[in-house]
Length: 260
Image 1 (cartoon, helix red, strand yellow):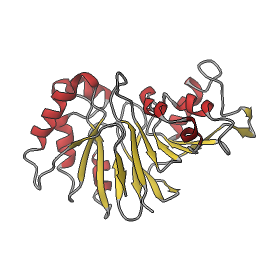
Image 2 (spheres, one colour):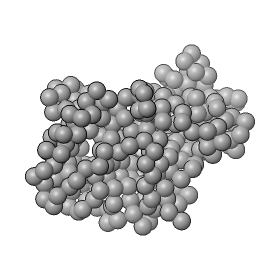
Image 3 (cartoon, helix red, strand yellow):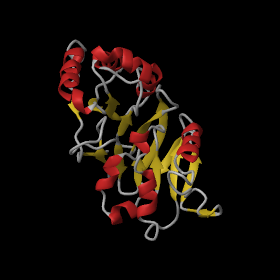
């Protein structure tokens, strides 16, 4: 049985029909928990038992409190949130603190909480129903990881939010069955100063990373800021034009499904 990846959200913002980052693996696991999760039915939310977070920024964790609350009576067991220790600490301090949201990590009791926080280490691998997921290096303004989703037949890499990260691309070159690489490219090259401070990718940085790849893959681009979509797409096409073998980028859309 193939492992499916459904794109619930893939924008650098949330307005109109745009949703922030969330990927649904099969029907029980999320990678990030942005506003795209809000399009799921109550029954679909109840089937989610694991969430893997890339980092703590709001556009990637915004729907986590609502997801934890929406299907309390329907979910069998706690919702397990996997992330770096720094990300889990940020959730406890700033989100599940009894002020912005009830502390479901200790309710209804510390022994039987609605949410279980599970620390994840860089390069650690966890088993999925139809494959496995491994934390990949990333470089962002806060501690962050990407993920490699591997069905055994094929792999899908997701950068999370990151600036140029040589270690990310180096790890991908070790993956024999790599098929898809989804990379954020948030800003234009003209925004390189802001991108450097916030540690996001621009078209020039994307091309630098792709040039490190030693294998043919399908390049998927995600997380473009809503007001810069056409400019960033044009710059990416131009930046990738000189790479050999040729790389044709695909700009990810909400609702797309990938099978591994």
